[in-house]
Image (cartoon, rainbow, N blue to C red):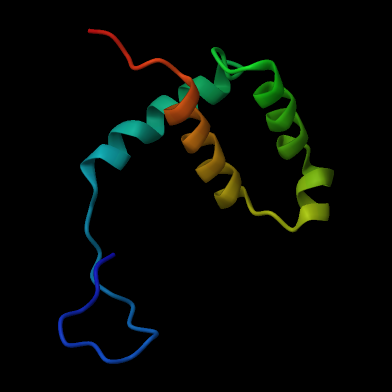
Length: 84
């Protein structure tokens, strides 16, 4: 989202902008998650197991959207860049 030109309201919904890179990353992160988070460190594996547990997530008040964001950050930070 980008701010609407001339908007003066703090709750301006903005203008939707599609981000092609985000659309390229989403299916890769999903495939990585489905494949068991291969390539991550042991501590990251344990954290993911904890965060994925629905009871833990409910207790923390975390949403599935936040979990997706975390997975994307981990994917970007810990995995080597794709080759080819």
